[in-house]
Structures are given as structure tokens and as C-alpha cells.
Length: 275
Length: 355
Image (cartoon, rainbow over all chains, first blue to last red; front, side, top):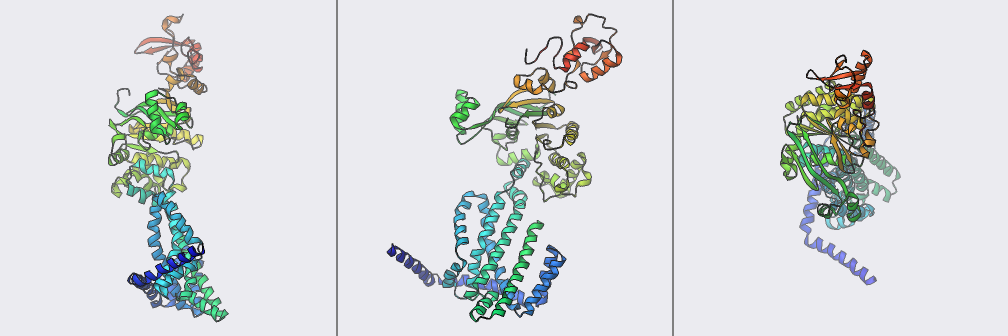
């Protein structure tokens, strides 16, 4: 038994070494692509003065939720600036945004397909269960081996963690079109495309929006953990503060994370309800 | 109406549900198995068994049955929402089970409208957009389809509600939108799947009358499913009684009440008021059987119902009425005949289930 375990471990290590040796060009390309996306988003967020970002998010909260939440949002973001954590806050926002965009670009189409094909759904479920039950640190290890220290590793691990809820809830939403509306479509003579866009998708939107919101929250959690691998942003600030027992900085950074998470959570939640 | 064009011709249609339905159908055709045998030997449920019916242009055809009788399955066979296991359904002479997907879509979109018990209004769309849905999927330009939808909504009295959302409407109004949606595409046939079952009795009655009037005005044909015999009698030109997947009697309300096909139908119609159903020609006796002078009797029409005859006889204080057709007395209705008629018995001889 021990022999078997040893040889299994050796196999895994060998595969990882083989990949770093032979597929380096692939992972370098992935790394450039991920970092490029992150840098682009970050550049846009940093180029704007802090009050512009605060006002834009404040306006979004006002439109989606209400006047008071809008004002609170703008003030809370201004507080992040006042704590001297603006650059880190924007780095975290850029990481979450970039990771969510990639995660959704994969999980929404996959979720829609899984909604249509129950077999694909059944095949995906154990994989998604596995991803969601493993401790999230695990994803940092292969990523750091293949992509190196830095935001690319943080992004790759975050994408993996953020995908499952969006896949599950998109598939559920597509699958659970009320039967009478499917019949209405058929009796009205719709084509398959019309059935999807005019009937199934509108009914799935609330579920899909809930999935997007959940993915975003998962991404926030992972981006902070990824501070260990040099993601930059508030996660790395907290990691550094823990190592030097700098309690005040770690509390400030935590507050900034809470502010950012709550703002995006509330805005996307009310977007789901509006539909 | 008997000479009008047949729009839906349903010929010996079966629907068997279950994994082994192919074998079950084979056994039914070769050995004539009953519904119970099929369930026992093949584990299959017979939804519709050997149903034949014809719906003519301008006719309202009611299918009445209790829940589980297969009436909702039968109506879905008419537009192939459910595939028949056996038998043929012709819509305007075309066999719909042989149509390809495109032809079937066209037939459903242009010739057969459908109204559901659940109404099924799309909650994200306002009333006008819902009414225009059928035309929208046919690719009719927005202005044109909105005009047609607005006209259909005007017919059901909802012109003021076009910009509202379904959730803001009462159940009765929602079902009017459902009807307007079916009418907007101007189909010849409308399938009504228990459309008024979920409504309050008063609203239901009002919608029944409006539906009948509107359908007749527009010259549409309708197949109307209901579990309520009163509703079937109120709305239908002809009524089919369905039980255990089979049509056990098809005829006018008067036919069914006066001459039920079996005890099941007889029990069903026992409680139905005859006052507006039974006409003078059904209860009259020949002039020869009336031992008195006919010339002095007040005259009535053979199509006058019992309610009208009772009114006439009590106002004139006569003992009987003479039924006159084309200026000739064809029969006599006495007070006794009227009382028999109220009980559902015609002429002097009681008929019905006991006979």
C-alpha cells in the first residue's frame, strides 16, 4: 500500500515537472494573457482619481438599490482611500473583476449546455463537488508551479474556485423553465432558438444572476487567500501584516475588503432582483 | 353546420404512455387488449383510447370529462404537443403526424391557437407584448403585430390595460389576455384547455358567455375542454363525454340529456336543469294523441325551450300549446309533457337509462 502511495505521489510530481519542462510555452502564454487582462483592468481603475471610482460605484448603487446605499457606498470607498489602501483596494477589485470575467465566460456557456443536456450535468456534478469541497489553498500549488509567483497564479486559482456556483445555477435556471411556458412556445410554433431566447432564458435570468453573485463572492474569498502567492492587493497586505504582527494594518485592510465585497454583493443582488 | 368543412378530423387515435408502449400498441391492435390488461401486462397507461371526432368550421366542440379521463391528453394530440401512438389527426385535411418541423410550426402558428388553464402569460412582458407573442415568433414586424394584438385585446375588452404587466391583472383578465393572444394570429381553430376552471363562478359565467359570443362572431372553431357539464352545455354546440380515455358519447346537449349512452352519462346529467335544454319538438305528442280541439290552443315554435313554454302556458291559462311549424300544427305540448320534460323524459313514454 505504502509503495502504491509513494509511486502515485512520484507520478504526480513527474507529471508536474514534465509539464513545466515541456509545456512551458503554453503556461507562459497563459501567464501573459492573465497578467495582461489584470494589468489592463488595473490600469483603468488606477488611472481614474479615487473620487471618480467612488462616485461611479456610488451612482451604480443609487440606481440599483437606492439613494442612501449609494451615498454609503461612495463614503465607504472614500474611507479606503483615507486609510491609505486605495492602490491595494483597486488591485483587489481588478483581480476579482478579471477572474470573474474569465470564470463567467467559461461557466455561463457550460451551464447553459448542462441545462440542455442532463447527461453533461450529471457528469459535471462530481467535478464541481470536488472543486467546492477541497480547501481553496490547494489550487495555489499547481498554479504556482506552472505559472510562477504573482497575479497570474492568483487569477488562475480564483477562476477555478469561482466557476462552480455559476455553472450550477445557470444549468438549474435553464432546466427549470415552467412546463406550461414550454408548451406555450411549442403551441405558438417557436423555433428552437426562439424557445431559448424568448422563453427559457428570460425565466433563467434570476437564477443566472444569483450564480454570478455567488461566483463573485467566491472570487473575493479566493483573491484574499491568494495574497500568499504574491497576488498583490489587500490579500497580500493582510498576509504581510500577519507576518509582522501589524494588527492595525490588517484590520484596515480587512475593513477595505468588507467594504468592497458588500458593495459588489448588494449591487449584483439587486440587479438579480430587478430582472 | 353539418355541411361545413371539417377542420379537425381525429381518426381512431390512441395514446399509450410508458416504456413498453410500442409493444402495448402492438398487443392492442392484434389482440384488442383493454386498458386494464395493458396496465397489467405492459405497465403502460392508456391516456386516450380509440378516440374519433370531427370539428367543423364555426363549431364549438366541448370535451367533458373528470380529471384523469384523458381530455388534456386528447386536446394535445390535436396540435401534436403529444405524439399519437396510433391513429391519424388531420388538420384542414393535412396529416399533422407526417409534417416536418417547419410545417408543424407553421400549422400551429397560423391555424391553431391555444389557451391554457394556467394562462401562461410571460411575466417579463406587458399585456400587449404577451398578446403579440404568437405573431412575434412568426417574424411579423413590430408595428403590424402590435396593431393586431391591440385589436385582439379590444375584442376581449382590455384596451386600457395594454401597458400593464400580467401580475397587475385579476385571474379573469389574465385569461382574457390568453384568449386575445390566441386570437391575435387569427387562427381558424382555438384549443381551450380548461381555460376558466380556476376562476370564480361569476367571472367564469361571464367569460363563458363572452367566449361563445366572440367565437361565433368571428366564425372560429373551438375545441373546449372542461370538467364541468354545465359549462359544456353553456358553451358547446356539441359535447363529447370522455371516460377512461375513451369518448363514450358525442352529441348536442339535448341529445345527451335526453338519451344518455350509458349509466355513467345518465348519472352525470341527472342533476342538470332541463329548462333551457329541451325544446318543444322533443316533448310534444302527436296531434292524434291529444283529445281536444287543437285550433283554440296558443301556438309555439318547435325550437322554444321548456322555460319559454312554461311561461307561455302560465300566462295564457291554457291546458296545452300547439307546436306550429311552417303554418302547420305538428304536435301538442301539455302541462304533463312539460313536467316530464323537466324530468328529462320525452313525450308520454319515459326514456333514458331505465329504458
